[in-house]
Length: 199
Image (tube, rainbow, N blue to C red; front, side):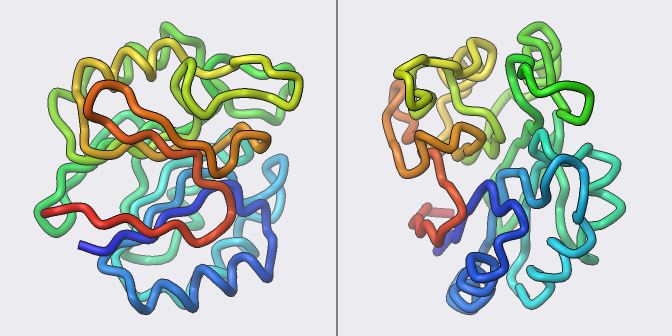
């Protein structure tokens, strides 16, 4: 199965156009959060992606809330946050928001490590984890070299061992990859990322 995945679009029109064009060759499209900026412009961001005809699974980033994304997402999108779905025989579980909390202030949709752990506890098995925040120690470094990923997310990946875990959030680590056990972890960024996952 051909999967196209991206994160952190932040209303970049040219990036959105590239994703829509590429999606014609995808069996599934994954959006790992931060479609808009600071809770503004989500409807416009969704309009930029409206040309995607493949099934879409998305999680909210810290730039939009789960309620905002559910309301704005095009018809047929599966919007996940602490829950899962099955698409084309793949079990997918999603968790959005920033984990742990950011210093960005009231606009940012954040989760504590304890909150994330509680929401991830419902994931008993998955082929793919769709996350906004990266796991601690993998694809989570800032430009200053600080590891700012989530301990709870790493523990969930260690426990569930999906084939693939995709994330974003830490812009300085876009394109970085790593492994936790048998799981490939990829910090996506706002570009066309292709994955082949057996259904």
